[in-house]
Length: 90
Image (cartoon, rainbow, N blue to C red; front, side, top):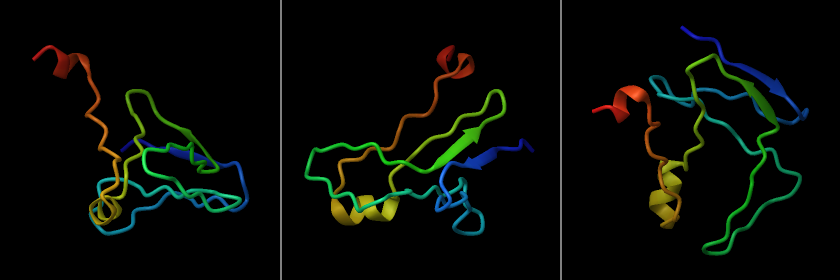
């Protein structure tokens, strides 16, 4: 199993964790000085307060919370799967 290292860049940054048993990925939280409110169609960079060191051939993805997406009709879409030489050759 690969090791992913995290460094907190802010004291209040939350260390990523699995929210439920059997979860496929770690949950990452926002590290905000003040609440962010977005109007429809607006975008914003949301800091996590973390630096992440990934091993070779690994990636990190930020995805919208599925429950939030369904309940608010959020325009966030799930990112496409990464393209690799293996999948691109098929």
